[in-house]
Length: 450
Ligand SMILES: [Zn+2]
Image (cartoon, rainbow, N blue to C red):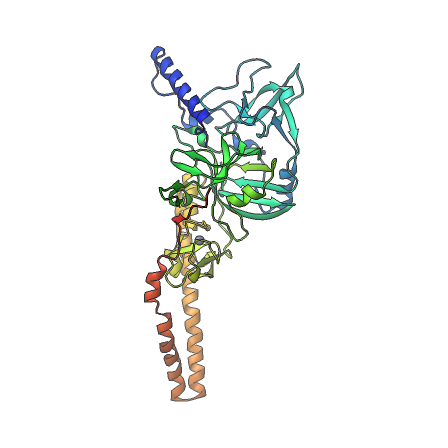
């Protein structure tokens, strides 16, 4: 959360007061806020931080690990202080706008672009608007840190997932919500780049949301548990913000799942296991096309009337009596009964192809024509899978029937019918289906004292 600490609120108030005062003397046509496009105009952004040919391949363990272990240069001021790069040594700030133009101290990585010039060095870093700010800072502020050598974290803004690496190996990943900028608050974008976890600052209250277990990595931007309301009786209600996991939603912080995945990964795990100076790499999403998951990816559902599809056979939000859930393949998601299932709001399974297409369309990385063609293609593919599934069992059943009929006489032909008839009641799930509608408990869990 960028604008939530008391100190920042005070600053916001001061900014507002100064603005109102200046507005009395300077005629203006609108407020000082810039649109996202205006704020970014003329700047390189987080998409340029790792270079044009960067692969953004989370499956390349070696490349990811090398990046996570590489030393990082930060600005040696307090973790809640920041530094404005200057146009010339000792000159004017490169830019100075609301919450912009500065690089946060102690944990935000910078690139050193030149050598010492009479006590000043040319660097570039990323500000809260996700802009690369290139300018001069005092050479004595540059400090190189060796990140923690056992843990590393890569947050991909494209997939909205947080990926943990341990001792050179991919460990696990979980859904997050990074910042969602708007024209009133273009600085809400979560800045890409390289950081280190600097302090375990803990839970905080933000405009009615409680954010537990916050780990600071870029001053006001923290990694914390998905927010909740705390009700009068102490129960925590996560409904609104938990259902946003997997998409941008925050004011800049990285919101992390509160229910553990099958590897035990959630914000509690990060809070308990990560060490100070664990590198936090944040990949930009601009210009990248969201890929489809592998067709063989296993998803899970409750065949007795569940309304959701899940990432795990033992999704933590599903009532025990429905566990383990039944597996099916991602390729089947648009077919038959799977076509009407919704993504579990708790375990944040992969999205449907049509949903991914819509996101890519909205992000401007595919055209309307490409989008339309893809919808037709998905329908054709789903129809092909459905017809394959319905014809194959029928054919084999007919074969079996024919074999039976030829082997014996009348009783054999009746037998399959009887079998089907007796099986039918156990499969007729009228009662169970009604019950199964509430297979997922997602709204309230008892307060745990944090
Ligand atoms: Zn689930």
